[in-house]
Length: 126
Image (cartoon, rainbow, N blue to C red; front, top):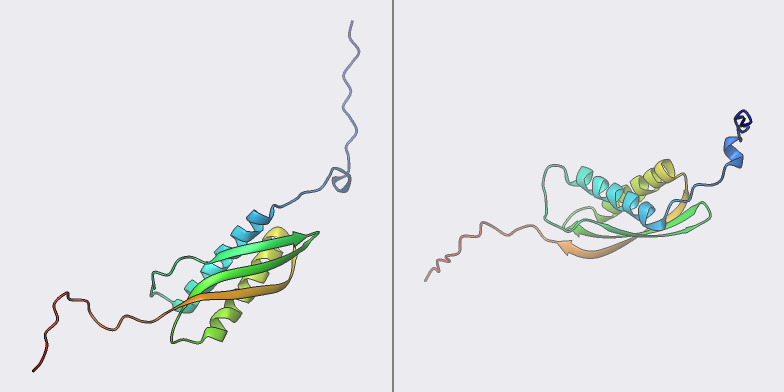
């Protein structure tokens, strides 16, 4: 005859262990937030620029974020960078529960608007 089964006692949530979020996951959150911030700044127009890339270093519950991106020119570069910083910090704090004391922005390239329709045939005046 076997002994009756007993249910182990419940362990409090704080005593069960910890959750660790990988740096690359936090980087993906930051890159997506930067993409959304730039899309909101640009409105409906698309520039064909590559999506932002983020590198994150996490120490305990503090994330240091560096975002590399390309911006439209001429435009308000400071406003675009401020929007990216704000949204990246908010999203990382909300989704990963990490403090974000700084978000560094690397502007790798500036995109000028197209100069006119590309027709393939140029007519020269004499």
